[in-house]
Amino acid sequence: MKITDSTRRKIIDSYQLEPMAWSGQLSESEFLSRIFNLNEVRSTDNRFKTAYQDIQQHRERNDDWGDDYLFTDPRFNIQWGTDELFIQFLELTVHPLVRGAEQSSKIVGIYNKILRNDGLHLVADGEAKGQPVYKVKVRGSFHGDVPEVIARQPLLTDSGVLHEHLGRIKKSIGKDPASAIASSKELLESLFKLILDQEGVQYPAKDDVPDLYKKVGEALKINAESVKGSGKASQTIQKIFRTLTTTVQAIAELRNEIGTGHGRTTASIATEAHARLALNSTVTIAEFLLDTLARRKTETSAYELI
Image (cartoon, rainbow, N blue to C red; front, side):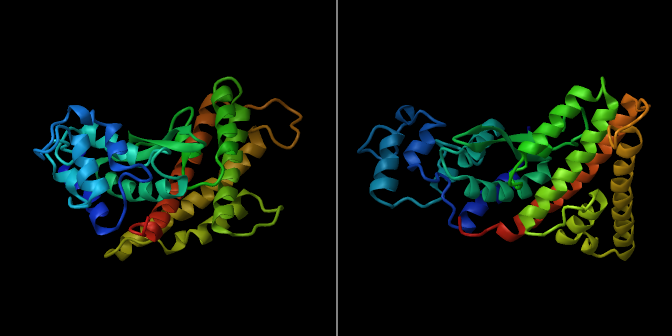
């Protein structure tokens, strides 16, 4: 994975523009000790022998080093060092040992807005202390047997039910396509409800999948999406959005026709190809909604005091 100089600069600037402590709730010496052996890094103060003593003296007992020393000190070389070192730094700044889930989620939003230019993003990849552990990954499509990124979105309040749907899809897509089609539809329904719950939007229990999608579109202001500077492109984008609406309806109908729905009296004629089509259509919709949700959250929380 390659992180460009421009991306590094923007991420470092985010720490200088707003009072975000990269060490979180740890002392700076504790934080950096998780990346470097500070007792083996030489001191630049002739009174001391190690960088560990330097940091304690100049940052923890006194405060006579600037907040950006970490990025300019050649001993640490965070800004100009290897991609692996910079990634290790980013991942540690949002680790559960360093800060709480809410603060980490906000910082992940800031990072991801910048990392997008390099085709990268931070996603939850495991847990510690009941909080997500974020790792830098290459951005890509969710398409495949198990698009687990859907269930790892830190912006959603509860991903457990999504994991259940994904597990069923993984087990059934080749062996029981009808069940995979039904689970794809149910995954969308659960996702829509999770988004509406998070946005504080009420919905009647009788709402079906198309009804829920309409409410999600209104909550996320999808109809207001446009391409700046191009009216024609904006019209084209709206056509695609209308196609997504049709796709949502079609997935619900497909589940009723050849999925495991409404107490079938005949065997389903669903094939694995049908199941993959339903899944990939579901993923396209989910990816768009989650990207839209992430962008909205980033726009409202970026550069807030953390």
